[in-house]
Image 1 (tube, protein in one colour):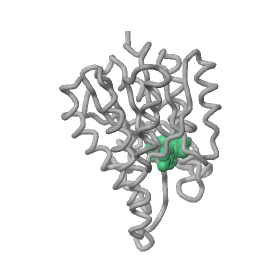
Image 2 (image 1 turned 60 degrees about the vertical axis):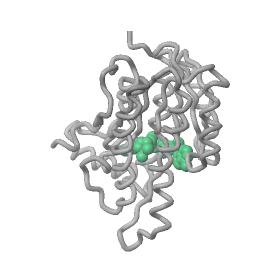
Image 3 (image 1 turned 120 degrees about the vertical axis):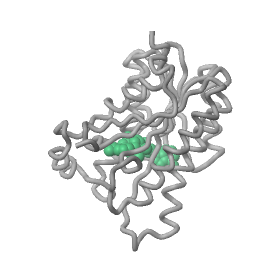
Length: 253
Ligand code: NAD
């Protein structure tokens, strides 16, 4: 028994990509999910909810902009409002921006860190306060924040590195409360973020890059979702403060 059935989870950035795949993985495992969506994002969160329901689970979509503390707290409250408890939180929301050093203004730096680093703090802080019966948290970092050098993404890399330290520290602080905290480090995963031609590789770039990945292809969002599901389940009951790389071997080749 992985202990997931009957649990309630918060997932930020849940309208697309990895978050959306996680809603389905959680639905299959019997977890009820509050899916955060960024108002104005082109992806319809109702589609993610419908997929989770089709997989036999319960899910609701709630607006959540991680740059706004009040929005994050209201999102956290929705777990109790809809499902009566909170056990799991996944800080998955993230933004991407590409800029060489000369173009990396303070403003650009702060704007990205506000989402990718401070947004993670807000999400985990708000959820931890509501997780009165223990639980588990996962933050989604990136190989760019782990060991991989990605040029023209210094601000993204700094934020994603910051997430790893943040989570390690929380793992120690929250262990006495029965809360585990781990990071997932995805490699190249086929989602709207990596398909973005302007700030990431785009569809062609993803295909070409696949040749340099030992697994021979980019990853699927479901493959990251399953790693997150594992880390938040009782199968990982003695794992905390760790980083699970999901990259088809890219960073060990
Ligand atoms: P995605 O673009 O589908 O998902 C990101 C989600 O975050 C979107 O739904 C977007 O609306 C949301 N978001 C953006 N700004 C937000 C804000 N201010 N508040 C709340 N939500 C916000 O792409 P994805 O690849 O599924 O991204 C999920 C996570 O995985 C991100 O943290 C990303 O950095 C990370 N990641 C992705 C890859 C990859 O190759 N796709 C690799 C490493 C890490």
